[in-house]
Length: 371
Picture 1: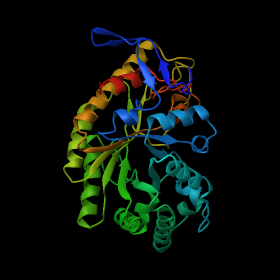
Picture 2 (picture 1 turned 90 degrees about the horizontal axis):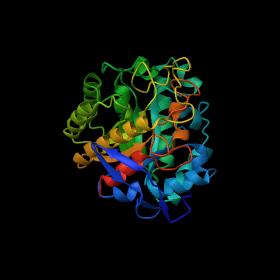
Picture 3 (picture 1 turned 180 degrees about the vertical axis):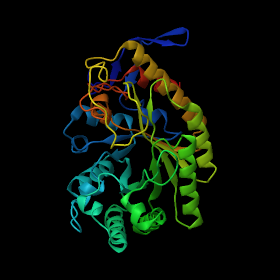
């Protein structure tokens, strides 16, 4: 089946609760029935792109992106190690192509990310002077955010600044500058990109202790008259273990502070892991037990994935007045970072589309919520 065809039929049976829904007549129109169209009145539907995708090297992915999503986030090309590999030397060759792709296709473009403790160029980790680190921050934000003002519509200004207990992560920024580095970053971003939305983004901030840390950051920014427009709950969750109650309580708590809420990096892992979250420094050793489905995900797990996605979107729709965007972290299963993290080389199945860019049961559940 090919996405070039205007109408495509994907026959299968769904089990919903105790009932059976016959989807043999289910039709998907490439124009007008994508997720971005179905949820147009609720919130943006986004995806994260790798460099092959925004450079048009993958035709199947390109058609799917244009049919299903109205917002894009770059996986890597706007991170500091890519755009400023050496002090004062900027390389925008890939990020320019990413932004051009978004502008050309009239997509809501997210910048990810300005200040993050990970994927820093080596020279930043070697800085020992407060003044030098402040200079790096101010120049980096001014140059990168300023370059794309009017094109990038929202920036993850600070990413993952918290530990799991809600305390500040002991990054190079905290060590040298203290917690005020967050306020400084937001104020500098507001100057560099005055008409761009500014976000704090983190994983596990639906968990009570880490949520309190995120609330403290938002209040800190507001008390300092630093603009923050939204907070991003990343949404790296596990099938069968999605913390629905914590997610809902966090959406309500963040919105009560006067900021919008976004689900920024949504994927649902189906493989075993002995920790939660998305700390890229954590790793596990590969083994047959860690990679149980190298060829195909069992139908029973595929169904559980679909049910969790359906329940999540019912929750998001309940609070659509508070949520501005839901972004999936990847276009299709083969693109997912979870194929290589925390176990290198294993086969994961966390998204709505399979490795051939065909819709899975989870996709249809999300379409039918609105029907």
